[in-house]
Length: 617
Image (tube, rainbow, N blue to C red; front, side, top):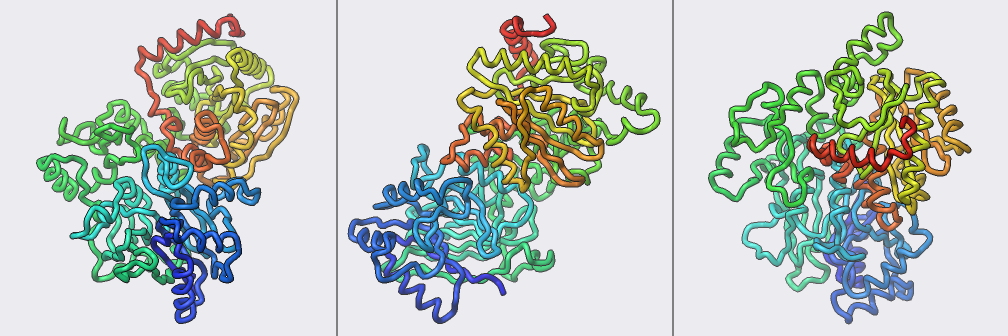
């Protein structure tokens, strides 16, 4: 039987009025499983405060009649109640399914995604503010967290926000109803089956609309405030079947009143000429729409996005020329010719994963197991000519090299995550640093130890990590400095990130780097990918990745971005989520590319500071 949910607009602390209505609906059409409150939950006047606090403190004869979840975390009394709840030991940790306020009452803080009686619910709490406060407003990190969720597979059942998307406002209503362009962008990306909001005294349900690049429709429901004078509808009963249990045919069903998506011809320019041109282009060029300029990948304040032109990358030319709204990137064109996946070039990842027939690395080999087949030396020799990391390759960017040893060399990371982010790279074309001989390991230890001492002198520690893929790239061990004050948070950061992806690290402690790597070398079998991280203090984290299981190639960068920028504070869990699912700018190396001249200056600066620690000097 489908779950039965009640939806409510602004409560404004009027709990007696709300529960009288809930009791009536529950008796006539129930029982219901939960109540979602999508508007301001706390009182807007002192007159309602005593009534409200009596429920919270359990002094009222009435109790919360069913599980209630709310996002409107502002109003009179909100700071006191929510601050107390935040300090409750039961609410500590990584929680997106609601912080408990009292029996049957849960606060959906910031932004997140959780399962409600089988329904997938995404929420954004509070209202938009340029300077997000602790309660009542959402931050850019909360928005980025939802954009990260939009990248996950599956269909979202409920999208719950305080304010409406701009396109959802019915004609004839004043601006006082409240709309938010950020919500418009999020709804376009997340594509919930139901978008539910509070609309300041107005009930409004628009016709369902089709989504771009999705088969299902979205239904918008705006709810009025509890006890409003105009007697607008403030409670709504709904019983949808979870998308996760529906067939593809059921998901794709549309009603006769289904309209086009309000975002299909979304104008990116205020110029009437550009808007007209854009509409006609969208109609005739669906491939261009698919790789359109998405706001979520723009830097703040930029007029244009950074998405690639599919036509240019695939054919080498574009009929729009300079008037094209997409990026004409010759480097991307060259990578495409060499077989690199367009989706990977454009987004930094490909949803098809191992099932894709194209390369998912700018230096990736096509043959997964070439090193184990007859003639593998010849194959590796041919591949190394195209490899960015092989010193004999014409494609190697030698200006990034910092120091060369007998078996390993040190180079500046392309698009560094932070200052002094470097790579330890084997001279030999090998798929993993764990695959080399024990004699070769000495050169690696020397680089690791020298980098550790170099960073300690600057008040920092180093996290080393490597993504070892069965697809066989040229190995590189990434070395990322983090402030010493945040080193103790590193293990927790990786573990919470792994929980989000649904796995658990094997965690072991060693007395030295060499002991840890000896253990890691026993975990390589050539048939299974793995990710590992060497954490300051001797901890080694290891995860074996099963065949055909999707694993983000940028995972290590993303978690380190979280540690470096956010400190991984418990109160910043949504900020950590944004870093983790590749929505923080730093997590994508392409957002931190430098010109060749800039890279040369960075390398020379690093060399001068690293010289006294360099094991090859």
